[in-house]
Image (cartoon, rainbow over all chains, first blue to last red; front, side):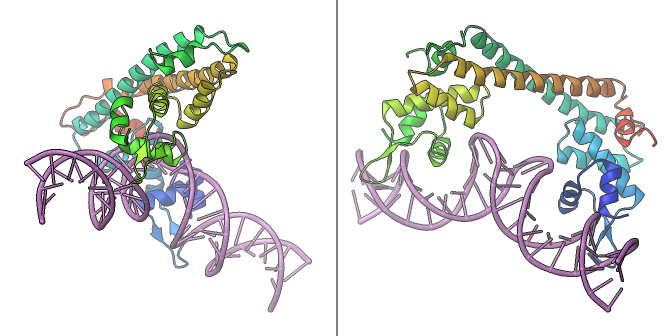
Length: 130
Length: 130
DNA sequence: ATAAGGCTTCCAGTCACTGGAAGGTCAAGG
DNA sequence: CCTTGACCTTCCAGTGACTGGAAGCCTTAT
């Protein structure tokens, strides 16, 4: 099938699918007219990548996961290692955002938000000496 | 003062400070030899931006906040609006990451992580029909 | 005179796309 | 047969916010 149909079936924009070919993530065949030709297997790979990206895996993680997906001799430990690493990155990010949120919420809650200039948010950003 | 000293006092890398000039965020003077010259006011601005970036504000938000910082006729409502908007972006991001975390943790917890190939993580990524 | 360290500009790379221009291909309708 | 429109191709540029590196100028100390 052509790229448009592969896009429909995988849920990915055609632009993105071309990009995945460029970085050798999912490489389709070509038909006589130069059009990309996606086999059902190619589409499965695209769907796989779409789901993995949706879970926040980097494209390089997707590449590793794809090769594990295609290797029926894989050790599930290898998959788990990638996912566990990603999980702790997510946890770190959540913790970071929660800390930002706490600080910012505190500042916002103490700002009157009226037409007067005094503002604890600006004061905080300006630093302790100003 | 030169860029190196401004970097020390603001906690920003010299590279970043040059970048801020390029995008007209904090524009220093120049001395006769072509070196950038940072006044104490410039350094305050750099510190301000450093703190705002640390709270996750975009550079464009920083530009807006800086101009409010410099405007002693500002309405605190304008500051609060930017901060509130940012706060809800943070909240959205946290919610998104928590959802990812939940899904991924569930998968990781159900993966044996041994040398056998069966893996619920791969199964999930492969989709329901495989 | 030279060496070290700081400064300059400019170019390229990061990540994962996304938009757009210019042009080739194909099937259907008049 | 011609045109229209949808689809496909490649290539180039831009996103955000830097970061690294090369080549070369300036200043200060020895």
